Image (cartoon, rainbow, N blue to C red):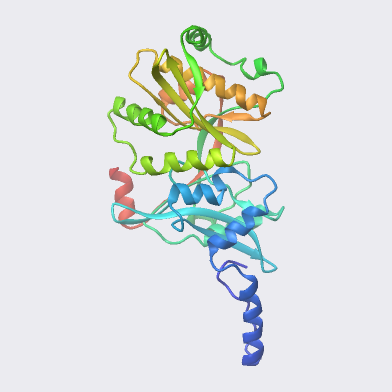
Amino acid sequence: MCFGKRPDTGNSESLHARNALNSHYIARMPKTASDAYRELYDQQEKPYLYGAPWWLDTTCGDGVWDARVVFKDEQPAAGFAFFPTSIRSLSAVITPPFTQWMPVISSSSQIESLTESLFAQLPKAAITVLALHADQPIQTPGKKYPLHQRYSYVLPYHPEVEVMKVGYSISLRRNIRMTLENYRIESADQVETFLALCKSSYQLQRVSPPPWLDRVIPGVFKNLTARKCGCIWLAYEGSQLIAGVMIGWDAHTVYYLAGGRSEHAQAASAHALLLDHCISIAHEQQKGFDFEGSMHPGIAEFFQSFGAKPTPYWQIKKYTGLGRIWSTLR
């Protein structure tokens, strides 16, 4: 049973009986798909960071994100959240901002059999681009939503920290040793300094920051610290701020969420020092470290210098109408 469908009570039922059954059904049903998703998320034994309703409220805006939920025996059985928006005045269904992928959450061990019905419910849009966590079996409605592979870069957990870091390249180890002598690392209580570093990085790349940056970064940091599931680390040379990183974690993994650097000549080395520090934090928590890899060759090469391995996740891409033209021109 999919969200929004009421049970077929049959034509032979009396109006009174039909209304009584529907009233009982509605009373047990959440008011909206997002309510059903929240209910299902609260049942997860080891929920993913990106699937958290607070994450969705923060990255998309409270009440802005939507979800699709499949029901079984009138209870939420599987759910998936997304961001309905517009791009260049075209309707779009996309992964929330600042989010690498979305998990399919479920109360059933037969999750694969539910996902086809789940994705068949997605709203029609000119642009559909969704990233899905790949550790779960996914089945989409055939050619309607074909799956493509993308890659993140992940450093798996190992009980020995030196084994976890054994894949560091020679040049990376040299840079970290040099920066250890010159820089100090501090945690940040305020997000403004880190936000300025993020904007500096975009300026150095001569690209405009995303329009959501000023809203999402502070909101995510506030929630991470309130829930004790993330932090910001900054690197200084004396009193001069050089680089910063934001990390978050769930029961599975520590995620590199964002980074920023100044125009200092050694900012890249300071950035590497910070990531090395965060990998040590992941080891202390007995978790792997996800660099949230990019398909950009230069960024991928930097992450691979830590010994991180390309790890696939799924992506759905579908363009219709003017969306097809947009996809070829962007």
